[in-house]
Image 1 (cartoon, rainbow, N blue to C red):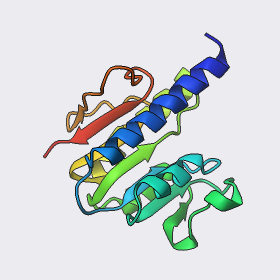
Image 2 (image 1 turned 180 degrees about the vertical axis):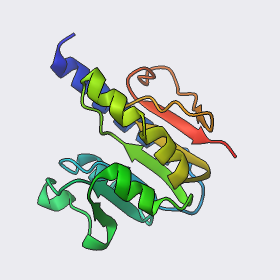
Image 3 (image 1 turned 90 degrees about the vertical axis):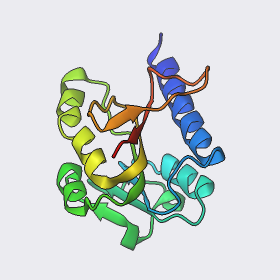
Image 4 (image 1 turned 90 degrees about the horizontal axis):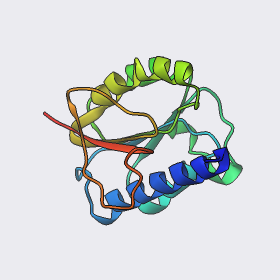
Length: 161
C-alpha cells in the first residue's frame, strides 16, 4: 500500500472515530478536550466544530498551524509535550487526542514510552483517549468500534477507574 493510501486510511479512521464519539455523546459531560500535537490544525478545527462549547487545549512544540486553525493563546501550551503535558496533568480532561506518531518505529517507541501514562494522568475517570499510536496501559481499555472504522490504524480507549 502506498504512503498516500496509508495516510488517507489513517486520517479517515481518525475522523470517523472522532465523529462517532461526538455523535454518540461518549464523553463525560464535563472536562476539556486536550489536543496533543497541533500540526497544521486540521484536527483542532474538526474538534472545535464537533465539540462546540468544550474548551480545547492544545499542546505542541511550536505553532505551525494554518491561521484559521490556531487556538487562542490561553489554550495553546508550547514546549516539549512530555513535559508540558505532565505539568498540566490534573486528571480532569474528558478526552485526550494525540496524533504525534512519526511513522518511524524507533521514534514512535520513544513516544509510546511516555504517552500512555500521560493520557492516563490527563484523563478523568471514563474519559476517552484517541491516538494514532497504540496506548498500552492497564487503565486504558480499548473501545469497541463499528465495522469499517480502522481499528488497527487509529485507536480509542476509555480510562477505567
